[in-house]
Image 1 (cartoon, chains in turn blue, orange):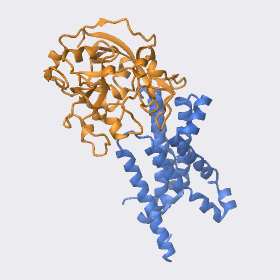
Image 2 (spheres, rainbow over the protein chains, first blue to last red):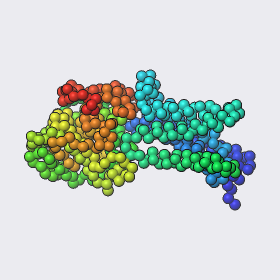
Image 3 (cartoon, one colour):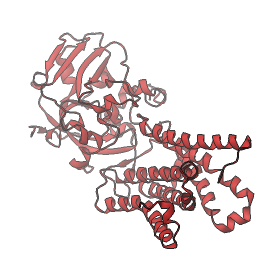
Image 4 (cartoon, chains in turn purple, brown):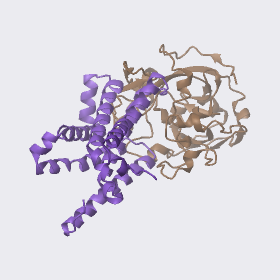
Length: 211
Length: 270
């Protein structure tokens, strides 16, 4: 007999073990880049390598977070919902590391350079706004805030969609030539946003989802 | 292959050289991929022997020459130059080569020769980047110089780096090095040198005219539309003390080359 993930979630031990698994997996990219850094195996421009790597994983975790609801509904994976907040917070975690690495390794925390980047560089400004948005969502992700904000909480957290679009613009704006990778992620985001639009239209039409 | 180069004293930068592994492991050579490590990874089987170069256009002695014939009369010298990438990183590299002007003179430019156009090999079978569906660059890669820039003694054709023959990722077997311009002007793996009366249609300018001009002189006062050119990161950089330095006018070669552009508005002719 094959044990499904849903079955695992039926026992409290299973739930706990799976929670730890889901908690530790997203730390693998961080462990990998720390390892490569210690090995001094990041090429001639380790600063750029690290910043790009962390940025890419921020985007990936954002897409994973956005995929939770569609995956739950399409595949009936009800257990996935338990990890949505965790992956949202991991998105914020990697976004913070990305920004921190940029400020430290690329700008060396030089105030003149920071001021210049934040006032003149369109892709930096867009990325920074997206990060501020993620901070707002992360700070209000606790149970207390969900309760306090009530229905407004959902409205606030719809911000994740414009944030995702800003993140994609931030990414695309950096490219000098060759848009293959950006197109790949943009297509994924378009699919996830398209799913939302579709279910919104259905809801308006009075068709209610089972979950 | 070790190259025999008479050491040239001038110009020496006094800055420390970027190590060989970084010079040959961190390259923009989009014919071999978009990543900085792609050229080294994907160019190792690049066939540069035999190699021919076509000399054409406004010259008295046009023709297609083997690399050997092209190089024979020229004594190689070492030139240590700063290389400033348009992406705001830089290196210091000991090239081995000879003045481009010496080569051009041999082929007897006509009075109509106003520009020099260079073309990189186009060979999608060997160059995976030229097969990419998503690339926005048109192949083959084309670059160009004004005649007086090409005849300037600082502009060289390089066949080596660090005393060895150029590795494929650095533009083997023959590349241009113009140290006062952004790196993309220094075209690699040259198969054609054409002297023309009209300004050549150069690749990056054709792709994004608002971002890349024909001249592409290093200029800290004229930003790329998407990033500042006022500073640069000298590679290799160390993580906790990033080597950020101020970018210099004409990449520090203003004394030698500024006169070429006197009276020109460098904001317009960027």
